[in-house]
Image (spheres, rainbow over the protein chains, first blue to last red):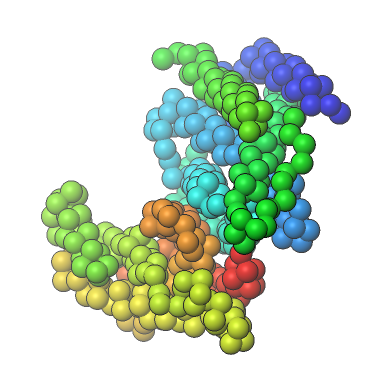
Length: 238
Length: 39
Length: 194
């Protein structure tokens, strides 16, 4: 599928999801607030998917040493941090009128916040390292260390909050959801996933151009003095 | 704020952020291409 | 200089939250662990003598296994963090007068926490070697991943205080330590080569 097709599909699906979310009947318990879930749940789903793809890209880079995997990892992380931020924001915007506070120490919210900071750390690391292979290797290794610990973070936070679970009928994702409301939710998940794919592809484009600029400037450096010139980079990237 | 007010707020944040990110991508790609063409 | 920094933190916090003794006794242990997590890792980020590229190349030529280097650095850092814990812990007990129960368990928890933070710090230091802004970056890399360490420690001391079972939290600390050991050993050679 060409990039343009993917992007049009993403835009179309997003618009459809928006319309569906706004026109389905309100929830029996939460009323119209349920509509925020049609954006919150997909964002949270993408937060985890993007993280997983970053992990896959990291492992694939370490195995194959092909920079394309590193570009995937980095792109997925950047798009992922956007969706994680949205998951947090929509969670808070839902929580304020429904629970009365912006933040509750609900396990899932805390975990999403922790994931947000891991993303930020990963992106900050990438930004700080010079050299494409070095950046790829180090961020991949950090990513894998982080991924190994994430399950523990998950369990420890869930156990911690399990001690103080507030009695609440109103949970962010109502398991009783069905019918048109479920359709609106799934539509959102599908649309956001396609949007994620389109964004990651474009972000990888950007990474390719920026990386080749780095390569080009490196090729200009003297290797072993003026007697030897470094190989120059090939055709200009488009 | 009414129920729909909160919903509108949430959707504004979501679609505004996505739009903003798309715009930033477009801008950064344009700028990178310009620099690549110059070099 | 990190111990005095941690001590200052403990001194300054009551100025912000109030000096009511019951409150401070209640939150004292938690604040202690927070200071250990946030400031204690700084002791693992000092530039050691063996870290410059020429020194590392020499060690590699001498046949020193990178995994062994990781282990040695991690052990040294564990001791440093343990010293930090003990020193700052004493100050926390003096300033906050908390109810300290279960010294046996605490004697187990302290080194488990120290080992976890030390290994995280060692890995973070190798990942950020040679980077300019390393000072601010390593703590950010460490803090979110160290959440289970802090939860384990804080819930353990809290559990001891109220007389609840704490085996689960000691287990969390142990599992974290094992996983970090694995991660540190597996990533030692690739990090060395980058």
